[in-house]
Length: 363
Image (cartoon, rainbow, N blue to C red; front, side, top):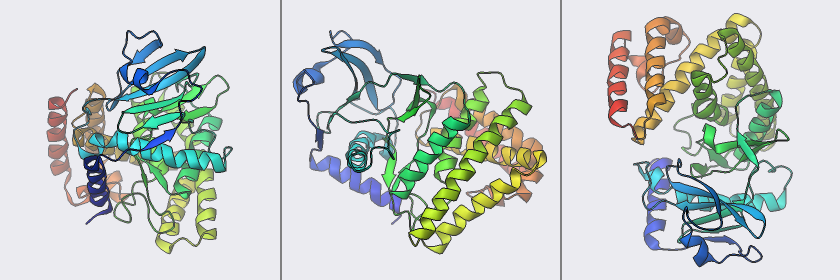
């Protein structure tokens, strides 16, 4: 049995058991658990509400002059797979882990939100309100914060799959904050690549950020960047990723990590270093990783039957790469998960079919 299937079965069994998980306390907050459970858009505590979350509804509360974030579990997740159905349980479990880590080393995990109170069976998560906004631009320092946090989480055995644009905030001091952990799973960093164990080494922390956030951002292109500007930003991002993974490799070696784990990180480092040596090398890697990330995110949306108009744009982008850059991708081993064994015509047919499916699964 794969680690993924084993984890999913364990989570479903935990839900079935009815066992509760409680973190923290409501002492001093000024509101009872029963009151929190009854909060809706018309409640006097509510400053604003956010309904875009697929597994929970979020409220900005003001209680006794202090601002809070309340996450209320949806009666039914809008993500139609096991991970979506158990994501609230998973988030509470990870909040428990992260609370313990922050207590031991608050500076190392300063970019992780605090948890004031959580109750699994009551569907409640209460955290201090983050005075921040979605990231609309990137620079070297923002990338450094993101990748250093990712590396620290991975080295402690926590793998986050969903670094989507809505899950990272930035405050007025240019400091990022991670606050959503519904798809963060445990793994053994010295012997495993990620929470799938040794099955899918393609997935790593930098790839997850690029797939769920960066290439989504570049596809939307809210700042109307030219290709030259996009590649300049990509160079900054890749340089920050390189530094973080050099640090990660040193820690893995010092911790006695298995050779395949160290070799995979080393191969990534070597590939990025080579790409950063020339404009042509950087652009080639950009195309390879853009294809990878857009195709992976397309598949993820289809798996969860949670597609949007941007999913269709990703399908178009993937088809464009197959149409125009097939030989380059083939030579660079840019195809994966069986696509490497298919012809150009077969791939075009496959992804046109996936685009049709994405139209059916629009939320």
